[in-house]
Image 1 (cartoon, rainbow, N blue to C red):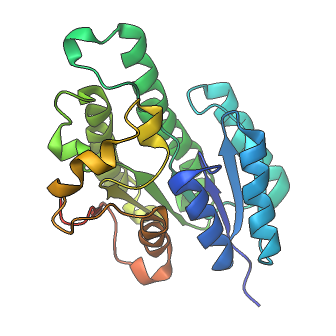
Image 2 (image 1 turned 60 degrees about the horizontal axis):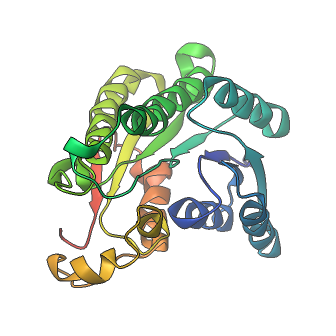
Length: 250
């Protein structure tokens, strides 16, 4: 009987992260996930997974803090042992703003969480999964955004830039660990129906911009989760360094 694989999802209490946790559990993964502050939302995801017969474990951690990241991975080590997959999903946006009005504090928060946090989480995953470090291999999926190519002018050029950094990091790390049985890919969602738009002060954003999407609809978090799970799976065994757009054609 094969060993049940363990997955860590950052930012798994809502939106794309929660959908990924639920789908991974349905497909047989043991899932640990981090959440920043909303414990009730995290507990609800755990209950949903357990109701379906799966196993999930929520850990409070701020991926913008290296000490929290270290503690997060050590908690997964103690709870599940070997790590087989990482989904770097946790990220932040901010209020719609032009660059001329952006503060350095906003920029530092954006890059600390979206870029440095993801890179540090990937570092910890590589230390555990890479055959060069005594691991048995694994897969990393980073959540980017089509904003990385569109630029988000007049809204969030800083967010778009942070996702451009994730694209470059994905390709570079994939090549760095390609001979160490670790695959690294990214999913780039388009406009998805999640709470992130409201958190950026634009609850009507999907309605306003739907006409720009060739498919004329926003995506669902579950559609992004399906792409993530494919990249984690053995079906994607020859796929690394890929940037997969799931954006309705935008």
